[in-house]
Length: 334
Image: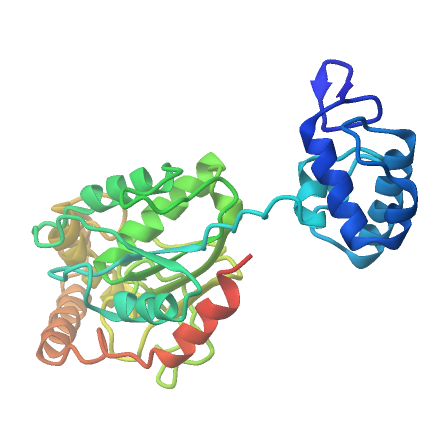
C-alpha cells in the first residue's frame, strides 16, 4: 500500500503471501479474528477492521511501535508488536575510556569502571588508544582518535554504534584533556552525537571547572580551586561528574598567583607552550620582573607544591570506584 508515492506497508486491496501469514497469526492470537478472517492472500475489509481493533488494544497497552502505526495498515512496527517479526535488539550503549599519561588503555580507573559495567552486560566498552607517553603531551593523537571513533556507525571491532545510541566517557588526567577538548569542540559545533551523551566521569581532570566536584568524593579539593590548565570546562553539564581529591595538583589549583605559576609550568610540560594568556611563562616572568618580591614567593610556593605532589601521587590515581560505577549505571542507558 502506498500513501502518495511512499510505500507504508500492507493495506486493503493488496495481495501478498505475507497477508496469509498475517491472517493466520491473528487467528491464532485473537478470537474475533477467527470469526471474521479468511485464509486468502487478499487484504480484505475484514482484515482492515481487525488490524484497527488490535492497534487500538496495543496503543492502550503502550506497545513500543504504537506511535508509528498507520490505522488499518500492517507496517513494520505493527509486525514487530504483533509478533510476525522479531524486533531487532537495540545496540548496547558505548562507554569510551581515555586513561592518563604513561597509561595503557586497559588499566586504570576508567578501564576498571567501564569493565565492571560491561561485565554486567549493560554497555560495550571502547578504550581509546593514543600516544600517551610523549612529553610534551601528544593530546592531538587522542583527540583525533576519539573523534574518529565518535563519527563511526560501526566500531572497528564490529560493534554497532548507529545514530541515537547512548554513550558516555570516563577520562583520567591527560585523558581528561583529550575528553574535555573533544567535548568542547563538539559543543561548539553542535555535533550530531552530543544529544546522546548521557554520562561522563572525569578523574583528576586538569580541565576541572572551578568548584565543580562530585558529591560522593570523601576528600574533595579545597573550595575555590580548579584544574591546573588555563583552559577549563565552563557550564559543566548535569550529566558530568568530576572525581578529584584533595592534594591532586592537576585538579586542585588555587585561583591566585601561585595557581598561575603552576599553570605556566603545566603549559610547558603539557603543551610546550611558553606564552598565551596570564598563565604563560613569559607573562609570569614579566610579572616577576615587575614585582620581584611577591613573584619569588609565589613561584617558590608553586615549585614546593609540585615537589610535594610528585613525592606522593596517591591523590592522583587512587579512587573509590563504587559510586562511579553506580553513577554511570544510572546514566548511560536508553
